[in-house]
Length: 334
Image (cartoon, rainbow, N blue to C red):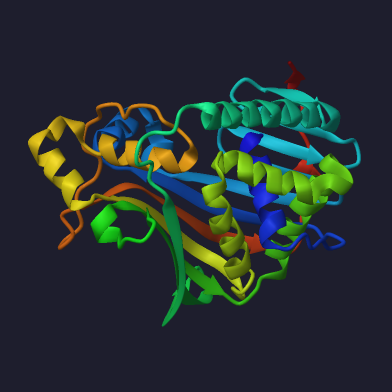
């Protein structure tokens, strides 16, 4: 449920709060997240089939209902009834929450996040606390290929977080690269995004835009991320089409000093980097020792991959029936 709220509000920002009348549709996509290093090995050992092969999910929209399902669980949003159903296929059961209950949960969570942010600001400032800058770049490479029957063009979006006034290689930091293969716009996928906007408007009412911005700030937990959110909204709005295949890679980059410290204390891994970046989010906790995560890229001994996520749009249909947005017969409410 929390994932859908975050996705929905992000869409509200990216789409500029646009909304359509809505139309029936179905889509299927595959998502896989790969962690590197020891964490990746643990996820591989205990994550089961989903960790190894990814998760295939289906979204169906019919009228005022949207159903999202995978092989284990599902979520049904009913705008007319103002209810959200969480479905457990293995247990053949479901839970229900009203929009009013979800609104209250969000208000409580927002209040708690604001409290934590205020407490962090009240703590004594560390000597020489580092400020960060965010670089944003969109590159339409001109490369083309056919994916799942769609003629796609490559667009690479890069967000770099580095120390203010210094180059990334000098200060260290973090890089998030989103490699997208864009097809011409698919109207049915716009309907899926529009449904989420309708959901957010109905859930939060006239204050939806302010609520969306509040959530983005709450997720960031600190004002330094606000420019990145605003820049992402602006640049994403310039992208034409529908992403068929998206690969997101998150990397940490060590400064020469951090690299030297890691060589002297190999058990520290990327903990020092995480601790340094933690200042960006207003966290002043001491970095914990952790095994090294990821392998340095060729020619970049100071760079390590944290995780890679891949999302692929497998299929889109322009219709859906009532049966696609119903709780299976025989399932009991918990």
